[in-house]
Image 1 (cartoon, rainbow, N blue to C red):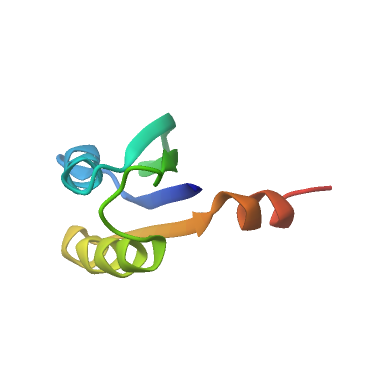
Image 2 (image 1 turned 30 degrees about the vertical axis):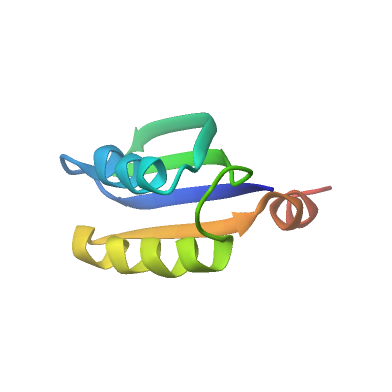
Length: 89
């Protein structure tokens, strides 16, 4: 199962490291990633693969939301099929 993770917030050291460390800890593979700084805001989008993960998307969403609070950013996790359906023209 694939998911889209979006990360948005003020740019600061360690955002990519914390999110990536969480994913690695739970064997969630990063299939694709893009990140940029827009007007001082950090913006990252990742497509991740849960096929070998030791957790599910709901647990990851909850735990990454908690992590986002400590970083002062917003992290969203959405099933790739739902994300694609929402952004289809």
